[in-house]
Every structure is written in C-alpha cells, then in structure tokens.
Image (cartoon, rainbow, N blue to C red; front, side, top):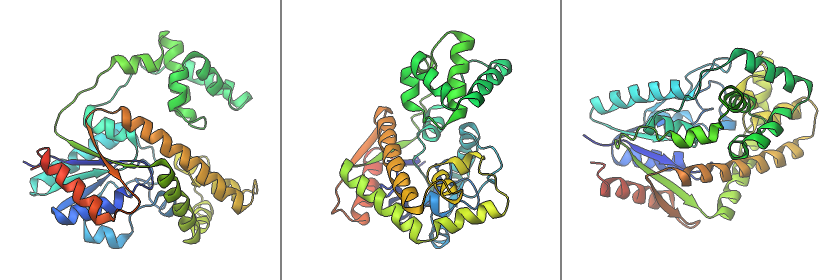
Length: 309
C-alpha cells in the first residue's frame, strides 16, 4: 500500500503547483491542509486552486463549510483520515498539502487537548479584553512568552485558551505541549519545500499584487454585501482582515497592500519556524531558477526513495 505524501512549506512556496504536477505523475488525489481554503467563497485571498486545476486532479477538503461555521484541527483530522482511506481504497495515492502546521501535526501525530475548558475563566478573560484590546496578549507574553511567540496577537481564541490553561492548571501551555509527544503513526512521508528567505519574500510580494489585480477587493466586498460578518474567524484571516479594514475606511488600498505583504512575510517566517521543529520532514532546497517540474521531480523521487511505494 502506498504511503500518503505530505507536502509542506511556507505560503507562496509553490506547494499547490508542485502537488498538482506530482499528482498527475503518480495518479494521486490532493487533500487540502489550509485552514482557510476549507471555507466557501474565500478564493483569491487564500490562493485556492482554480476550478480548472481541480477538474484535472480531484481535490478534497476545499469549500467544505460556510464562513459562519466552525472548523477545527480535530474536524480536519477526522475528515482527512476519511478522505485518505477513500483514496487508498481506490488504488490511488493521497497527497496532503497546505501551510497550516497545526493541521499537518494533527493528521500525522494526533492532537494535544490540554486541560478541560473553564467557562467562567474564559468569560472573565474575554471581559478583560473587551475593556482594553491587547491586554490578554500582553499578559500571555508575561506568563508564557514561548506560547506568545507562536500565537498571533489578533488570534484571540488561542490567546484566551493559553491563558485559560495557565490560570486553571498553573502550568504553561507551552510546557504541557512539550510533555505531550503525540502519536507517530509512521504512515506518512513528509516533504518540505525550503526557499531562501529573500526569494520567498519576493514570491509573497508578487502573489499579493496578483491577488489584488485579480479582484481580491471585489471578492471581500461581495462577502460583506451578502451579510458575511467581518467578525467571523475566516474574515480575520491574513489578507481578508486588511481588505475589510480598507473597505471600512481605516486606510487606503496601497496601505492595505503593504500591510498584507508585511503580515504575509511574518506568517511565512512563523511557518518555517514551526515546520523546522517538526520531526521527519525531508527538505528540498529550492532555488529561484528551478522550474515547477524540477521541484516536482525531486518531491516524487524523495517520496519513492523513502518507501512511498
């Protein structure tokens, strides 16, 4: 039985294009591991594979839920495992690709749940944040600086959870996560695309310009016009948050463009820090002169060399 290929790397590293090429080479199907591509109607800002590509190779876990629905790493794991079983049962190879590190970890090694949620503690924390925005993140940076470096200041849900764990158990969530080793099924072959930082930043800047030229602002405006709340989790994701704020008059489009580029570069840096710490990833060093076909060949041969088939 073929082992699933997991293809990871920072945003704009070419994962989708490489996965598509590899899938055609080895009669595979692709499973999305991007936490925002699961939402319907959020297309340009997520660099979602266009429909013509999805017709060439079957894609799974894209356009699964409405923006108003909750979608978690646990739900992703359940659905991804089901898709993997289905693909393998039909004699094909699953390729899981995306840049959401938690989703990849959840799939390959299981999930860390931590202490049970304390409703009263959570409500108190949310009330504190409502009085002065940013208070909770500053508090987290004091009590658990390691956890704070891994959580974006705007990710209130995760900030609250980390503080909730600390206040309820007296233990840092970063320490508890280290104690948890997770399950290692050994059933996946993980391959990562590594780029020079300057090159990945260049690719990010070009991608943002393409998104905006393709109608990203109109996409966000359409979402708001149809009643999608700007307070929903996917609407606060990278790119969407900045365009929403632009449409609200907080700054002009050029400022939004620069903010998206800056935050995306920061996100890519956090992604590489995350993936570099993950065990078992086989890294392919990519160069700016390499064609997608060359990178895909390297991914394919790595998968074969390490027992993919």
